[in-house]
Image 1 (spheres, rainbow, N blue to C red):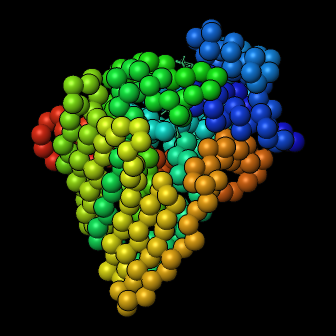
Image 2: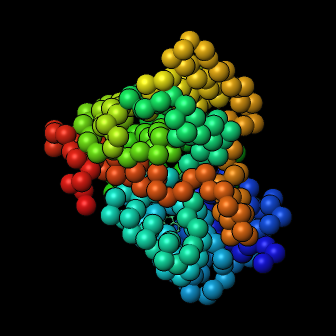
Length: 354
Ligand SMILES: NC(=O)c1ccc[n+]([C@@H]2O[C@H](COP(=O)([O-])OP(=O)(O)OC[C@H]3O[C@@H](n4cnc5c(N)ncnc54)[C@H](O)[C@@H]3O)[C@@H](O)[C@H]2O)c1
């Protein structure tokens, strides 16, 4: 197979800004079809990227056998049914984060992908960076010893998304073919939650990818600050090796205020400090020595073109999937437990979710 035939499902902000731009400039891919029930968005994106076939629903696209792979970039609650249908049709899938909203759905997608021999990539852009690869290698080869504690802080400026006014979040959405729909991040039925499903998912996705662990117990406090979805979250958890962790997260920074995306992994033999936004990584060993890894350049910080290209490379025989579904499923499980914990006011064991 020389080129991979790709269908893009969802013609919204992220698909047009990142995935279509990336795939249409990639010599190994042919974007053959675009799907969106919103006619205006569909036509605008098809025109901009010169895509010949358009559909208002993903099923006729899959039934027509037109594609080898699809990119699923739709509101969170629709990730599962669309990815499930694509895998059932034997099509490889890149699905945006969060993988899905429920751990049972994540397990089902993983089983289907394995049974069908299909690749499943999750849109965790940060995992495609040099530092993420290195952080994972350092922790999983035991260089910081036995993991004892993980601390995370993720503060971002997305409150306007949760209020249903994403156009106020000017710099990232300016000049894009289609901006986020008002409801995608503000309607709990579509989004499944606010800061947790939109931002904590990035941070904990990284933690589960780097550590290779999953959570067994989760205790969360969340506040919506007058919105229909959570804006600030504080979560304490225990991992399956006995290590404990916390993540604190707010989407309420105002544009211009400095953002923080810091993760710290404390082991019996060393500490790994990972900072995502400014691209910093260092290791500090128990014997007093340190390793400063070269900062990432501006271009390396958020390689939004790589998830879709990686899917294409995998279909063509590549072996490297930096965003596989298993740690993404651990993130889904973590968030499902966190939302339940915040709602019920108690610690939730992830074993309860099955
Ligand atoms: N990895 C990242 O950094 C990143 C950044 C932004 C968004 N995202 C993710 O991308 C996804 C889309 O977000 P967005 O900001 O582009 O939202 P958006 O509202 O701009 O786009 C969603 C699109 O899906 C369409 N849609 C709704 N139902 C559909 C269906 N059944 N079939 C096909 N299309 C359908 C909508 O009409 C809309 O055009 C979300 O999962 C989001 O979390 C990821």
